[in-house]
Length: 633
Image (cartoon, one colour):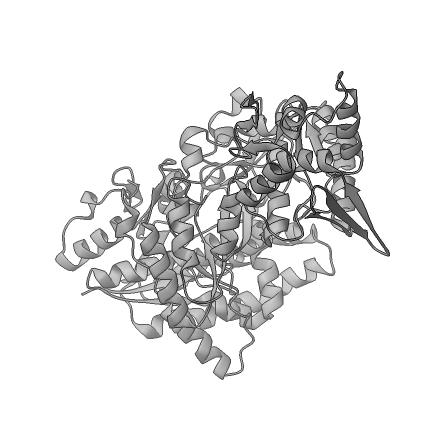
């Protein structure tokens, strides 16, 4: 019977266990194999300190440099022009840190990892390879092969999928026995069965044998067959290391998965997204399974912080999932990636279910930019979600992307203008980022169509592997390109960056409270607080602008308070925009003011029914006046 060890190398985060190795351990055990996991990333975290490790592990801008210090153990610093590469980061500060990592810390850590892995005596060793783990994995794999050539070495994970994995298999055939080129939930246990029985491996879909692919990998068809992850070894390693005085980060959250694929991507693949190389087919576990797995993991490991690895939260069974999560015993804190077109009551259900942190696909506050991305949302829908998150106590994390083909200065100006109206809502997590080209994305697959010129691997790949060993054009996931000389990425981008900086530095809050036929908006900044009273018409405008609507629709829904020619209504709308209570885009308005206390949609409808003289069927759809006249929404 095969004895398997699954290794999670740096720079996987040390503040949470590895979901992939956790799931594969469960799968291997179900198939009858002996399987353990080894979290070598914890060894590295202890060597350099918890905070320093997490910074290196979680900063995409230095992923290449972090892999480079391990690649030097494979090829030597001279073969990778290491001194010149590290010198780009200065002689002191970062440069000094990475020279110390390359010359002393990494070789010593690899010595300890090598001894620990070989002492366990496993016949099969598999490495998890995500964005910054490939060359650390290859470095340790080479050492293991030199000492025990009979050990079978496996690679799997997102950064060895497709043609990337095929090139790694070819280039490192003396180190790596097999690469799993796609989802391995079925191919991994099939591999173990073949090893135990002595059967031919060529019958297994999506792996490499002697440096060549068998057949195309196939994604699993049902998530219900995927077991819960087994994190017992991660926790056992932590306990043993801490007992010996190790400095490790606290466990921030436990990863879990309720789905794979992307239901939105099945319809419209976001142009920059390189996830899901085998297709966007959305597959999900039953809501009951998700809740049961979270409850079991929480009880086993005494933690209530969880993060979903799902590309996007389900939409077909959203209420069923959230209801199940809300029924869990305890005050859970959950993370999900979401689309920004969630309704008020859906955000309320997220909060009730314990979702405290979301990553919404915002990316821009320009409708034109969002259309270029195929995001399927508008700038005002993005504003609306930020407002609802503020109201329901959910923290959003998102970024602004720039550098899309066809963008104009007007796109930047639109975003800058809108940002100035929403300084009281959660800002982007950082400055605007130049959108990258990722392998498997529409940008990469259709470069000429999008007008990209001179697309090439990001420069750091040349410092990971010598050109005569591997084709970096095949192993690269991240790509650069030339920007057109007339691209508005200079003065306009600088103004956008300044607008984001001002937003991130702002200390402003707006909250809304409903009264009998009026409302109050509390506006607070540092050292200043004032209350503005809104009359019935203004309040009705805000409530109906809970979701984006045109001016005509808002006035019609909010009652006949305007003058005959409508000029009064136009003045009021403009005033509310100037005061920051409404945001406007493409002749459409949306409220920017979160309620001081969370409100359900029914409560807002009741207020409008009582004080506004109308009976809204839905704040998102059509409404009807008391006289029975249909009003546009």
